[in-house]
Length: 240
Image 1 (cartoon, rainbow, N blue to C red):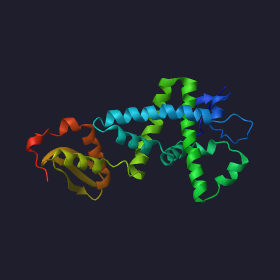
Image 2 (cartoon, rainbow, N blue to C red):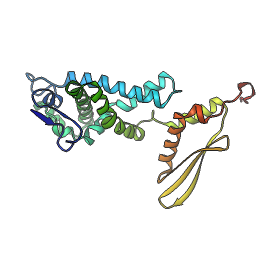
Image 3 (cartoon, one colour):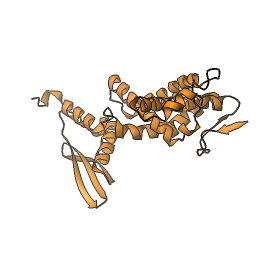
Image 4 (cartoon, helix red, strand yellow):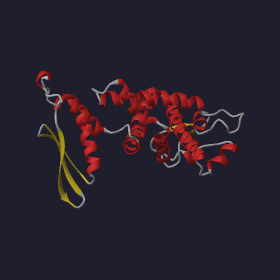
């Protein structure tokens, strides 16, 4: 017998009702004699971290391991994954013990932190459940399709570590090149933003928000840094 997890998202995955599905949504305190989702959480965390690492390594080929680690943390922290869980309607499907239920409806800082942790853990457990039920390829596909895009979206808006605009200016300073953004207002809701390197226009993008568009352009530049950024002879680069 099979069940959909959760109700409302029947198009993206199913898990077995005779074990894996129920295990995914069961917290360790529901109750003490029941099997919980901690092991699935550990398994899904491994898959999700691999997917995130692969995405970052391919998207930012010139970024060093220290910053890649920081970016990965920005994508898979509890705050980001808890928002992904809400998008996937997972919290409403979770099973808790009585002690957790009482604290769950509190609005204190401790309770809110606990809820973030619980919600993030069920996302990881769901990825682990897909792995056990449908195999590694399907689990990676599920994480890349249903978890990672949402995590990237939320990390961009909530994490100070995810700042591609600062990153391109840092690189430009280190390599002795100039970068600037030029804005042309199309109408009340749209702006055309151009990115210039040494006064040469290399990228453009249209959208409603200057901040959002500049971040997108910066990300595009990082991905194509070796192609779009001219190499300069370090011996002729002026240093302050």
